[in-house]
Length: 164
Figure 1: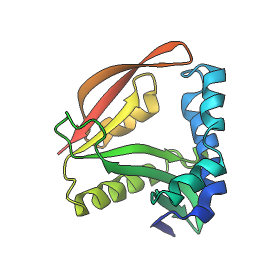
Figure 2: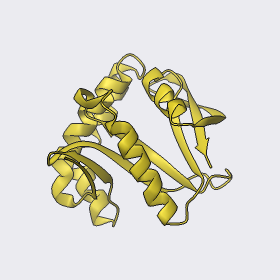
Figure 3: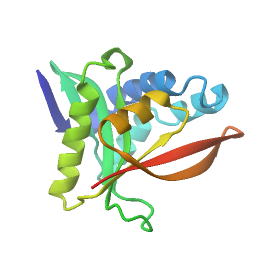
Figure 4: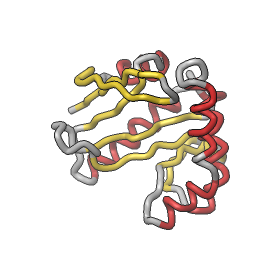
């Protein structure tokens, strides 16, 4: 059974483990190794508990009671864009890629944003993350922006996808 729910502080260890697996899967060979491991290390259980203490939570996708993915979402961070909502992160456990669960999580995250009046959506993906870019294009995302970010000394291009 596939369900979604908002996370709690008790999910911190599971979120840290899922984040670690998903980021190594998505970004190995894209983000320089040391920088990637530092970024992963900064998102341990303590970080996830901290965001919950500050009142945040993430949308969890569960498969038969097991956390299989998560999405962080909310108002658009750069207010200069025309979108109103943003999915900051959307990740699945690598074992569930290609099973349709990512689309399920995306649709549910978008529904949650629309319910909050955030009807236009923006998502960023590293351009070299071919799986991510293909995923967002398949869901109807239009490329509306490009930007460069520096991670671990590497200049990486980000693509902004929009809906609505």
